[in-house]
Length: 105
Image (tube, rainbow, N blue to C red):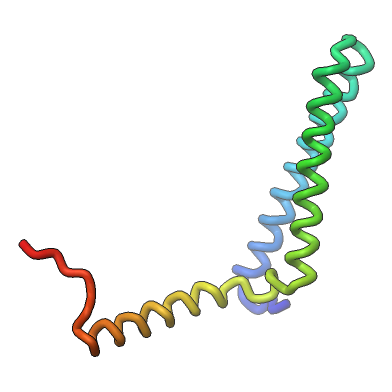
């Protein structure tokens, strides 16, 4: 990673902070739901909520692991530049052919 600019370091610190805060909230809610099952006798409510959280978490983790293994997080700026290049290409084609969307007034 290139830590020469402060933006990259800030982005890593910010994302890590958000991840830690959200993971802490997730663990807190998971513990709270677990205690609901044990104490209050609302087994259906607690079990359903915990299973929904866990299924969502497992799916999200697998999706992120797949994206990381495919290299989608290596160059996150590239799609933006490719989109701008494609727009310039389309503008050249439109200008050369004289076609395009026009609104007659």
